[in-house]
Amino acid sequence: MATAVTMPRLGLAMAEGTVVEWHARPGETVVRGRVLLTVQSEKAEVEVEAPASGVLAAVYVEAGSTVPVGALLGAITDPGEPFDATAFAAAFVPAVAPPAAPAAAAPAAPSAAAASRAQPVAPAARALARRLGVDLARVAGTGPGGRVTVEDVERAAHDTEAGLEFALTGTGPAVVLVNGWGVDARVWQPQVDALCDAFTVITYEHRGIGGSRPLGGNRLTIADLAQDAHALLAPLGRAPAIVVGASLGAAVALELALRHPAAVRALGLLSPPFLADARLRTVLASWPDAPEARVRALLPWLLGREFLAHDGRREAAARAWRSMAARTPVETLRAHADALGTWLQSRAGTVLPIEVPTTIAVGDDDVLTPPDHARALAAALAHARLEIVPGAGHALTLERPAAVAALVRELAR
Image (cartoon, rainbow, N blue to C red):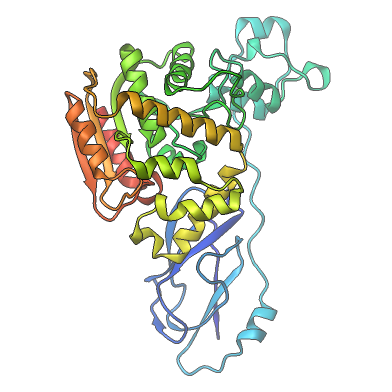
């Protein structure tokens, strides 16, 4: 009797997953308990074991496709067993219940001000306020009877001196993750998951992206973005922090350390731009405006050949960037690109008086900011350690998520 291979649930809230790679082809023998395929949820890639021994008789979902939890992915039969793939699929009934609603967090003890006015707070809003570090006593409720809603908490979280959309996850020493060009904070999700057990991980959106404040009328600079980061850290009481920036975010992290040295405990610089070469300037100036065309045009610049060779991983990356592109207006991309170009003209190749421990990581297959940039930056810093990652391209957070998390833990030590 044939055994169905289905999309597993990798977390209580998981609703769908992506097939990254099959490790066997139809007609090949598989063994129960051995890896049959790799799937990806919103948070991680997981190797899925074969549920039975026999022959992989059919594959219904190819690499790169996203399907709901419980969907039929393939079928395993006994050797020589008659099998009708079409009839098996037609008779298949998913046996997975929909994701359970998350349990409401236990209410936090109300502050004196909140208690005095007996302000009603939705349980989900209370849990979100605790995660974002929002004082509910200062939040005006807009729900029925003055009830504080999730939207009220989100609005209060954005109402900082910096005016940035941000999130705090976990407990412990602060780690600030600074986004690169053209992405939002979701790009750091693997690192947030890996580090929140030992650190308070702070992610945020640059101005002009998502719920952060608009660009404004003045010409944007990297110094402006660094000031935004400082204006976010100071009210939260999280300085000094380990600051990790990727690509454009590395330039922001460097500028933050130069202008506010007391706010930075250590630096992690991933794929940092530091030489004003013609290739980088051309890419920043010539990308297509249309989101889909932009994603496809940038993939070869952002990913190493090793990652691009895996259809499932490549298409999963394209979907992620497509989603992030929807939150990043074209005018923001243009302003951020101009800011980076101007910064490189003033900082490229110069000695940077930064005294904190710094780790620089770059992929040896990074064609956008190749290892020459990282070597020049390491020479410009007094306390820098350089790591060149074999087989990786520009997008280290995606291509080598575990290595990036290990870099942060090493900086903390």
